[in-house]
Length: 261
Image 1 (cartoon, rainbow, N blue to C red):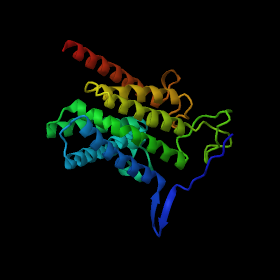
Image 2: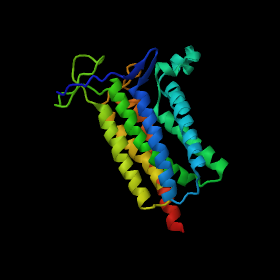
Image 3: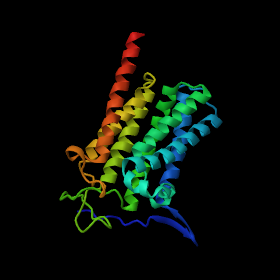
Image 4: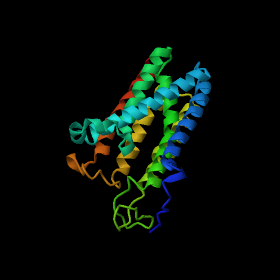
């Protein structure tokens, strides 16, 4: 069994103001996301000025925050928020959904591309490259916070998380950081390096994230208020099914369109 590092979630405390590790992870994710947008934009020959790249990042940030919050409300606890609608705005209490954030970013890319007259699939490809490393930092933030832990395990790398009882559990946040963050980043950037058809990195992101998350959910503790749902699946797994279907369908359409040319 490994020892959980017990990192203080608060990085710096100055009087009533505090800087938390989780917030720093978000800043790193958005900062690196901007650099990736700039770099991939140039590499894929997308006519996008510095100001346009900043605008795209701003749209994406809004999509992540609004979509992530609404996704959590609708997917994970609709009954509670129906009874307490004002709590929807209490984001400081926690509660964000990746799948909701993904829908929010996708909508933001569609709106941004339409307003700027840019090729939507290429912009989506670039955003996929920017989002993947952000997932790594997000999961590291979850690990530091000691949240979203895994199920009980007797494997030698199991950890006892604060608030999760006395038994060692899978460090599922680290599994996700490696698969959804590092591995997915490598694949998406490799596809960009090969200058594949527009849409391939975007739909590959949907397919691989869905697969990785679906697999990790087998060792991740389900939300206490939801438990196991249809056929013993978790909410995360059920939400990954349409992601994988969209990824496969999109790749098939891109391939057929390429052949038709």
